Structure formats: structure tokens, C-alpha cells
Image 1 (spheres, helix red, strand yellow):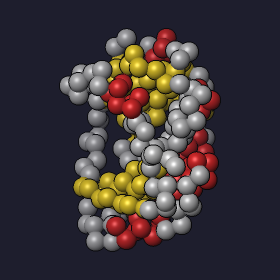
Image 2: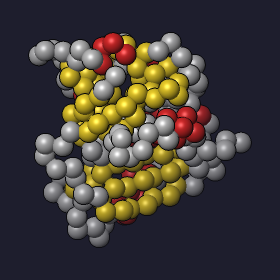
Image 3: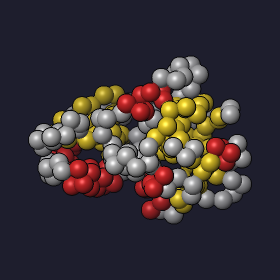
Amino acid sequence: MNDFVLIETLGWNPQTGFSCLPLHLARLFHSAQALGFPPPLTAESRLKAAVSEAKSHARLRLTLATDGTISVTVTPYIPLPNGTVWTVKLAATRLTSADPLIRHKTSRRAVYEAARAEFSTQEANEVLLCNEDGLVCEGTFTSLFARKNHGPLKTPPLANGLLAGVLRQSLLKDGKAVEQTLTIADLATHTLFVGNSLRGLIPVKINL
């Protein structure tokens, strides 16, 4: 029996509704099928019921347990101010690209917690991880994007060992991003962003 749960975290706006709900549900169903969980047939209705009385921005965390139990928690969320720029650091902790769980969002987060613990929250808003070959993959809770000059956003391919982030999927689907392997050296020559469906795309600075 799996000793972890599947997780989806998304935002809700009283004017525009859920952020990328179809992509979140598609990822949840895919992960459930791939990892032997029951199909989360009531996930959408549970999410909608959870925000039925919400009057301001909210963050929703849905979990799916191995027995099919679905839980939803709702907390207030304050969107990031315009012009926000985060500081990111590069972790010594490494991802293992062959790990079958890397591509799914689960409660097994030890590697991400170890990377985050390398720096204080005063030192870094987010921490980036590389795989065993030194290729840059993702942040502890965000996908990574890089742009050179006026080219498209580049984001590492899943084969390098990273989560199929929903914002990442949305930008790829809309043709606003392309998959491309990124090295540590690339971080110094590109304009960098991190992001997820809750927070959107956030410019970042890094000192290597």
C-alpha cells in the first residue's frame, strides 16, 4: 500500500474562479492511474463545494489517499504584489531523475524539504534543485523558466527529473514556453522566472 497521498494545490479568485482547474484535475487523474490510486471522481465537486462561500482569494489543497479518500482545505491567499522579484539559491541536494515519483505531486517531499533547509527564508524565497548530472530541474514548489534575449521561455524537460507543473503545462500548451535542458551556466546568461498555477510567473535573481 502507498504510504503517501497525491496533492493538488490551486488558487481561487472570486472574479475568475479556479486557476487552471482542468489541468489540475487531468494531472490528478493521470497520477492516480499511474500510481494505483482510485480515480478521484468527486474531486471537482469537492473543490467547488469548498469555495462555495468564499468571498476573497483562496488557496485550496486537495489530497487523494490510497483508499480514495479526498480531503480539501481552504486558506486565505494574498496575491503577490506587482513588481515582486524573488531571490533564489541553488541547492547542493540533488534530485534523482529515475525516481518514478518525481513527475507526480505527492506528500513524499523529503528531497525538497532538504533543499529548502539549506537556506533560510531571509536568504532565499525559493531554492532550485539539479539532478544527479548537474542539470537544473525545478524549485522546491515551483517550475523553472529561463529566457535569453527575446526568445521563448525555456523549461527543463520531464526526462531530466521534475514535476509536471500545471503552470508549466499551461505555458507549453499555449506555445509560450518550450522544453530545453538548462545547465547551471545557463542560469547566469538567462533571465529567470519561477512559478506555479497559484502564484503565476515570478521574476527571480540568483547569485551563483
